[in-house]
Length: 526
Image 1 (cartoon, helix red, strand yellow):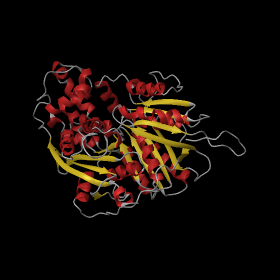
Image 2 (image 1 turned 30 degrees about the vertical axis):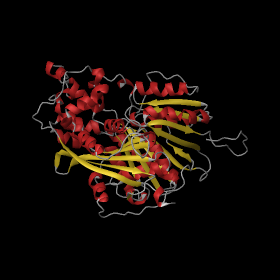
Image 3 (image 1 turned 135 degrees about the vertical axis):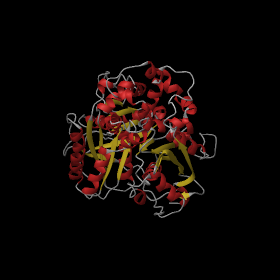
Image 4 (image 1 turned 180 degrees about the horizontal axis):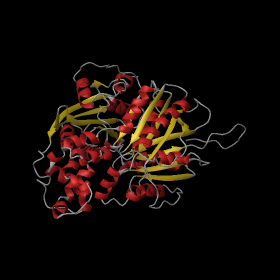
């Protein structure tokens, strides 16, 4: 493969931002108060006025503004349609929820002061997940390709995932942005932003997948900064494999009731990893874990209840008990494949499916387990109550799992193909969905609005879909995987339309079940 066709780092920048001192009122710098329904449309304007209230966002914005990356048509480079985004952070701006701790503590009363600060609280809760950062950066840069969020302690993995999506043909360019508080100085956030492009005349070599994926316990900001500076590290540039190798579902965990408590939630993830290992039959098994919230709201609430300062709340909220426990289990079982966690984004399990398919198509491992789980406990419930979220009654805790392998490598299984992009770019998949001609198409989304958008796409594609009412149980970041698992028992081709405003949208195409010996049926293509 010619060197110029390999992904290269063509631009990078760093920035930092300092949090507003705790003694300053949270509402300082805001203009006139806004009605709750205006939060989404006016959030960026509010951020510009109170940027030090959200230092992670401020640092990310500064770093991205120094990249020289422009929207489609504004420079000789990749169009926004074919550019994606990777955000890596463990803290985001979660500390902001601790500025009004009484809002999350019973008895919850609405004093005049609380009502005056309601916008601050709503903005803080909306900034709790890193998907909010991804949404703003994608809007700022004009990217319309895949966008995903990773934890901030996964080393060079953000570069590996960016390369993976480019090598597999999902994007021509990826913007990688990592941000977290500086070690020893929680009030100062540091960000590093990188542009990775396929067609570039010159640039820094992207690390090989094997090298990048072996650094999954280092802090991303310093790890990537060191790599860019030419410090220690493997700078091999292995050639990508041929994209488009079909994958099949080798095994799926059977449907199970909700976990009964946090211990059962985490233990179930470990058990499913063990079952995935047995189904794969080899320790050459990659693991991709998907979770929107993990246990971050529970850790944050516990810290607020004991009166912790905002930096400690942010630190506790960044502690990943589910994904971290599975990473340790991955080590304890001696698995030789990579471990990747997708967190802080509603479409986490859809994105995990895409990563798993690409790991297989690029020959990194012969099988990948996707384990998706979220816990809806007291912390999440109180945050949803503060937001007056109408979807509260329908959100459920869950843990599910699939194992994927290459098509033809093992008898049986249903072929699977995932297409991912920004929510407002997913109509581009209409032709592929129609060509797939599914016998059944289901919808997946975190909120009622997301679900309605998924159903509307099905309708525009002139495909039959079962009616979906508002009472449908949804599983946060694990929802797409649950819908795929639920479609495996259907007799013909199936598809899942996924929409999530805060990231992780697309379509999953499932082929018909494999033929039994002696069965005759018309030829099937994906």
